[in-house]
Length: 87
View (cartoon, rainbow, N blue to C red):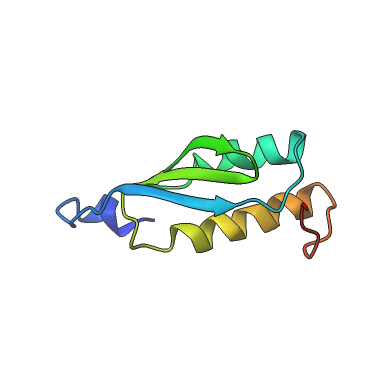
């Protein structure tokens, strides 16, 4: 559970972050982009080539690390090697 839910007075640091995708275009990438919007305080704002622009309520938090973990889980779900990258 997010601490923000338990303590709404916590300060916000909203903004945009850029995440470089390693998934190739197609269903796994689209599924991942939609999953990221389900992470607390995070919204997939735009796909720009192989980059995902995220809006986060707190850019100082571990948004990019959690996004990376989510991408790895999507790769596992689709049977894609974790070390494979989209070139």
